Length: 213
Image (cartoon, rainbow, N blue to C red; front, side, top):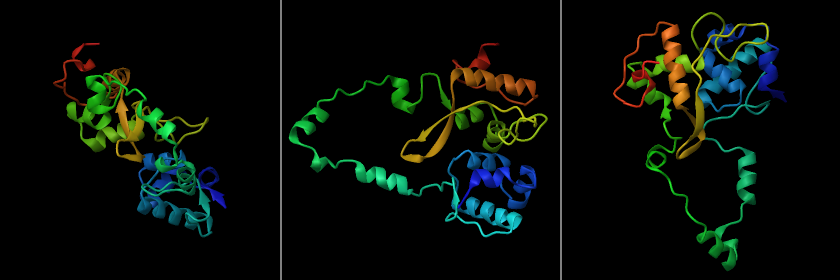
């Protein structure tokens, strides 16, 4: 059994070369290494390329640490099996559950489920005139000198990237979506200014782009 982390760390080629051979975005490779889920076609291309590099047959059956989007793991099955069913609860337990006070959400939380002032990364980029792919690269790869963000080590300079937060995607808990807090939105604007990225002001009055900071 191999782990995806040790396969990455023992490579005799650079991560950029692995990205080129596998035809996978460097940011995606970095996210797979960190344990984020990926689509099966992407995982298949990565394992096929690693098999060629190491000269051994690798698959999801003998490589740990790879998570496929939309697929339930054995751990999830076990956890689900350990949860008591509604029918198994006693009348007293059922009454206690039903009487639990409901959380009151403010308007912003009810609309998006995000912290007050936060915004989905895709929405923030579009509001400022950036294409989804362009801003995605700013988040997961970065700009400036060095290797893509997340792919360096203590001896390597990494590109500067836009910091972001993540949460489980509503309705799809196995998937993640990125969002920016108010501080991260201001930092993104500063990032664009430092790297001479062409962006426009948005029509959101509370956005830092209108505050002239």
